[in-house]
Length: 367
Image 1 (cartoon, rainbow, N blue to C red):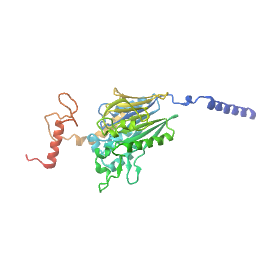
Image 2 (image 1 turned 60 degrees about the horizontal axis):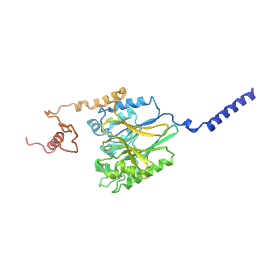
Image 3 (image 1 turned 90 degrees about the horizontal axis):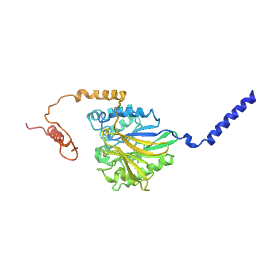
Image 4 (image 1 turned 90 degrees about the vertical axis):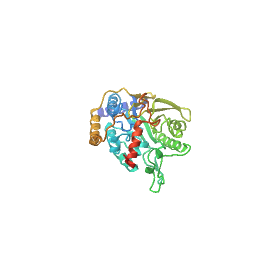
C-alpha cells in the first residue's frame, strides 16, 4: 500500500511538470477582451444624455461577457450644475462610488471648491484621484499618485493621470497660492511644454520598468481651442511608449484620432464630448489589438444608481424648487433660430440676464 501511494504521487508530480513545461504560454493568456470604459467632462450631467444610470447598467452588462473591465474618468465631473455647487462636489462623488469608478483624474474644475475641499473629496472618492504632474512646490513631491497598474490575468496595464497646466488660471489661481500670493502648487507649466513632456515620459519609463504591457494616459488636456503646447496631440508627439490617450477638457467628440509619437509610432487619442453625450470604450483583444469607440445608443437603466441619483436630488429639491420670480422670455445659450451653441462665441439672453442680475445684486437698482 505504501509503495502504491508513492507511485501515484510521483505520477501526479510528473503530470504537473509536463503541464508547466510543454503547455505553451498562450494557453494561460487572456481569452476575452479587456475593456476600459471612460467618461470625461460630465460637469454634473448626472441625468443628461445617457446619464450615469445607463453607464452603470452598461458596465454591469459588459461584465457578463468579460471579467476584464475598468471604468475611468478624465476630469471635470463635479462642477457644472446646482447639485455640484450645493454639495461642493460630494453628490457626484457618491454617484461615482456607486457606479464603481476604478480610476479618476482631476480636471481643472475639480479644484473649483478650493484645494482643501478637493483633498477631502479625494479621500471620499473610493478609487482616489491620480495625477503625475500636480506637484507641491515646497516639498517637490507629487500631491497625488501618478499612476495605477491593473492586472488582468497575465496582462498589466498602466493608467497615468495628467491634468492640464491651464488649471492654474482656468480654476481660481488663489487656490494654488499661499497667503502671500506665491504659487505652492504646480502642474509642470512652462513656456515650451517640455516640462510637462519630461514629467510624463519619466512616469512612462517608471511603469515600463515594472513590466507593464500597455501604457495609457488618462488626461485632461484637450486637442483644439486650448493651449497647443499642452494639448494631448503635443504630448503624444513629444513622448514615446504611450499606446493611447483618453482625453478631456476641450469637450470634443473624438471616437479615434491617430497621432504619431516621437518615434513615428501610432498613439490613439479619444474623447467623449461632454455631459455623457457618449461613453468611451477602449478594447484590447486577446490578440493584443487596441481600438476605441464611442457608445451612445443605450436604453437600459440601473435601478440602484437611479435611486441614488433621486436621493441626492431630493436633498436640494426644496431650495431649488423655490419660485423667486417670473420670466416671459425663454432663456437660452443657443441661437434661437439655428440652435447652434453661442456660449463663448457670442451674446446670449441668458448671459445678459445673469450679468444684469449680478449688477443689481451688487450695486442695487434705482427703480
